[in-house]
Length: 231
Length: 334
Image (tube, rainbow over all chains, first blue to last red; front, side, top):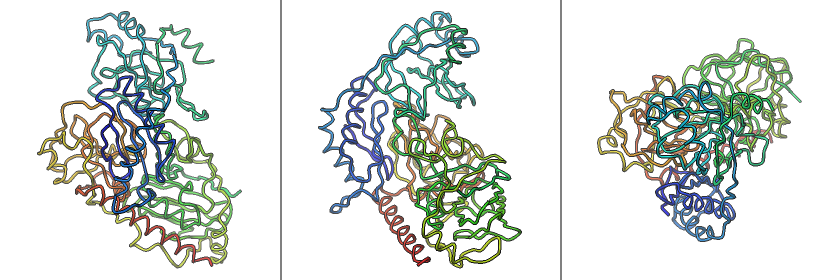
């Protein structure tokens, strides 16, 4: 566990080198343990990949001796860390997401295939043939970072990001795959689109997918996409 | 319930508050006012809690008609304003009569100002906040910037606001208070500020030349800047050399200075992403974020390094100052 300041109002706690299942679970457990007994001034603890970021208001952290609010928060994190061992692991639900691959739904499918000497069908088979796990939700609401992509499909981000990626786009960025919940600018390679809605502000857990979930993709045709989209 | 009719929307006018912390694990940025200090002062001047929802006005302002008598305050950048041809003074409470039309024109200096109304803007609280999340299209007024024809509802004013409004008697469309929040309390806005930063988590990954250039050179604000981030170009040309190795995407903070491979730094503002994979060379001190909120294309900024403990001392001093202002304002209607 490595603690470092992220400016004057946050601490970033790094728990490992890579966002593997063990490190991600440790991050979720730490965030839960910290929020279970919050220090006054704590704003939130956000797990993402191999780290947890702890946000606080330095003016509301209790003073003690000559220690700075940053030092107080670090001390509190170190004191609470052992309790993380008692937190339950992430639920790890199994979710199968329907995807219409290629064509207008995935403008970069052919290009991703060409980059690896694969046909479009082979890319689809590789992408939908494995189980992924969610290592983080971000950078925009409900966007899942999925780990477990076949190495045969690792594809660098586009040199120039698109100014508009359609909502629902399933994409590959380096060693990860993800789903864009909203129309947004984006630099990942688009291979398909899901009719599902990934984010709902009226829900207690507004993101459809949660960190720790196990995700599979199921290829669907454009007809099923249309039916599912309108239902 | 009193109402505001939007006659002209302005270039980008959104409902904002102090943000919605607690949802970053789901990718939801805290958001809120880019210049939180100005929003807080505008709220205090109308008797609101600091966290109340107000209008964030960007570059060119709206024209608004107030259905009933309303106590308002403007804080932040210096904008052209007019109520029946008279200028509405900023940084103080102002009583607008029923039917008054407030026209906010172009920013003269700076970029964003905040219009608070006593009682706050009554928009639904979504995920704990009333601010507009533009990218995801929720919060604020229907999840978007204002348009002509919109009608905003105002919440019930605080007892202080009612008492103070009564002291601003008169038949005129506009009666300003005779006092204001002093310049000593306002952020020290500038078109070329020196902004205090702390070393970022990846500071060591930058080579000595990039570190020296970052703290030594002047950076010019790029026109592609928005609520998400302030994009900078080195004034002397050339790029800041970013480290080659990629980092695992991790949490970011408002004020984080990211350097993507193209070597042009981006300072993350209120609508930043929640997770980022670019190396962060520095983080701006919270106390100086309002200075960045007011920069527009062509303005410039230089960075100077301070330790975390000093940035926190400055923040605490700023909070003590605001608490004093709050007490001072309360005394005006006793």
